[in-house]
Length: 86
Image 1 (cartoon, rainbow, N blue to C red):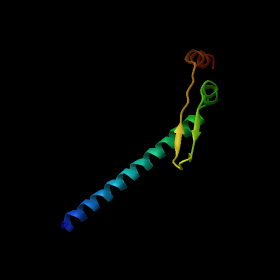
Image 2: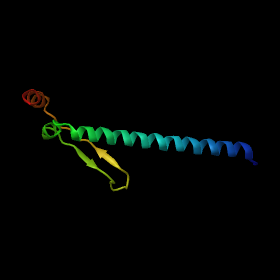
Image 3: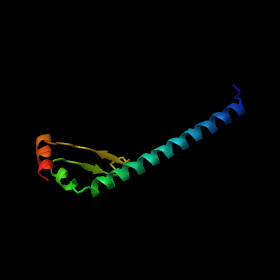
Image 4: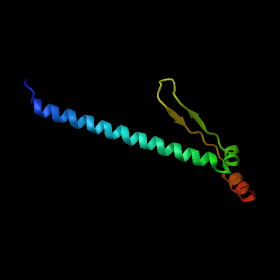
């Protein structure tokens, strides 16, 4: 079976362009999450809220992939009451 070289090249080029766009979008998402984390850490009420929640961040898991595990165990009444007190 013969292949159409022109079609193959077009598909390859399209595939590479799509992967590049996906990589750029992922980079933008990571940058935005980093900014959000910075803002959260700089919030004066961060330490108070942290007392009532469990957050575990694991970078570079066993498989070498960056993973984030959120374990939230929040008592909403305590936080709402505490924030009113602050």
